Length: 92
Image (cartoon, rainbow, N blue to C red; front, top):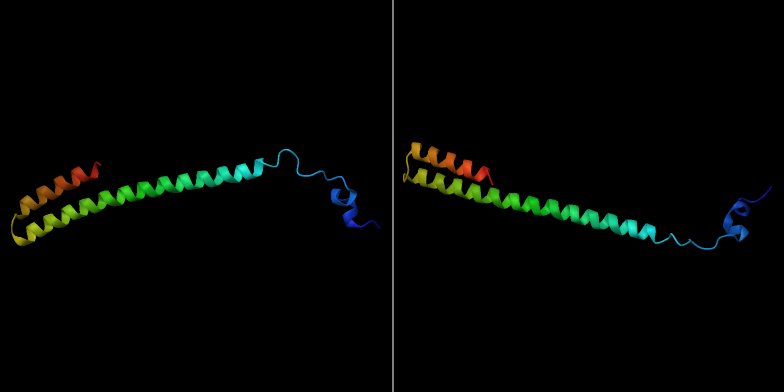
């Protein structure tokens, strides 16, 4: 019965190192990590940009609601300005 190690290249002394192709795997990992960071960075910037636009729109609606509540503008004026604000804010 032959030992299991006798059939491997390590036991027979035929292993001459990893060969000239060994840099491929670290380069593939590096490429994968760069692609991952670029993708996450793009998604993060898009999310922050959208959140900033939403915050500005909500702030405008809140200010308009305050003016309506304080009696500066009537209901018709409030609805007209709110529709305009949403129309202009939604197109960005």
